[in-house]
Image (cartoon, rainbow, N blue to C red):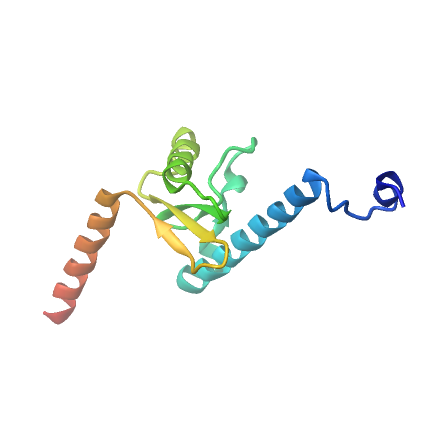
Length: 138
């Protein structure tokens, strides 16, 4: 059977790069949906929105919450710094980052998920947490 007949039937061609790309796109969309659901459990379903709802072009963050701009990445070779810079760059023109922290939710193949953010944002979160814990005890 030739590749053309398999392609004509709509069957994926294993040797083609395009078939692998579609699989990585599906994997990325699944990861974005999973991140969305995890954030919705914390913030509520109405508070987590697709970043694309705020723009007409395709350059925007993947998810927005009241205090986060989230860029979702999945795969075996994720560059966390580049992804964080993409999140900051995509949020800045629309001023989506004001009052929000840019983070990357990354899922490496066969590894537990991780989150990356700038150190100053992390320290600010820890200060807020300490302040809330201190004031809750008083």
